[in-house]
Image 1: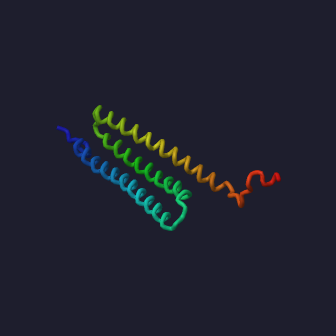
Image 2: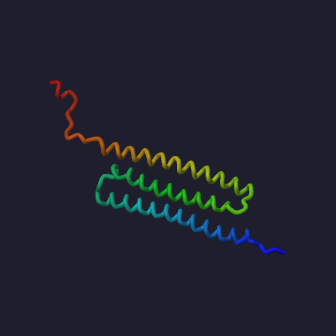
Image 3: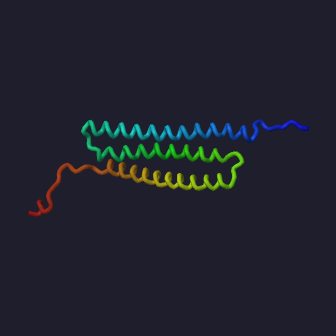
Length: 140
């Protein structure tokens, strides 16, 4: 009889990975929660100060979107890790579906963040007119 050279049995590995998955998913949930709280606080403080929400709204959405993307990446990492030890076809199929949905969410969130960033940069570069001349006023 030869001694096993395994550091951890399959059931032990599954237990350790289970704890790691919970930790990673909790980190992702905390990131999303922190982003939502931060965005709400910024939104409320902007409104209470009487500032225009139009200019700040896109900046707040952009920051919240970054938190969402990062949190979803952690959630996806947890799903991938969950299937690391002896996955069956059911687990692989579920991972594929979850990965596809979360990847699509990340893709669209990232695209929207890029569009918002471009819009904010465009607004910063355009000089504001000092005064408006009514149409036809100069032709008289």
